[in-house]
Image (cartoon, rainbow, N blue to C red; front, side, top):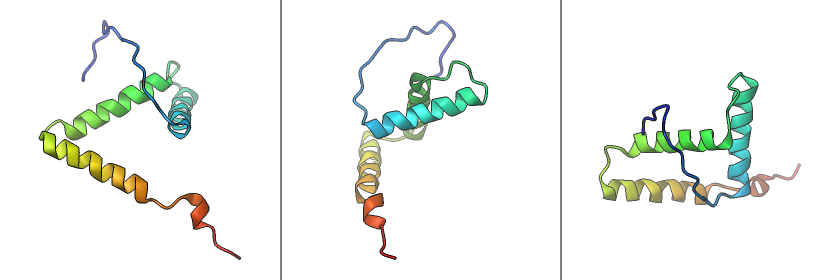
Amino acid sequence: MPQSRDTQYRVVAANLDPTTIAEADRIAAALRDEGWPRATRSLVIREALELLSEELSAKEPNEIFRYFIERRGKRTTRPRLASRRTAF
């Protein structure tokens, strides 16, 4: 997904949970703090999609499907922070 300077962007809607939005904002703020003046949530999400595209570019449809199943499974089996608490 290389982009040229005269790329026309379109607004698209995406449903993101508050944690994902906060993480995108955190990354954009870090970029701005380090000198990237136009770092935005959109930039971060576009870059994430670029990385995903690179990761999946040579994969067949069934491999893409398996990739998402495996990623989703890893996310749903992660222990939540609250359940990691131990009594002292």
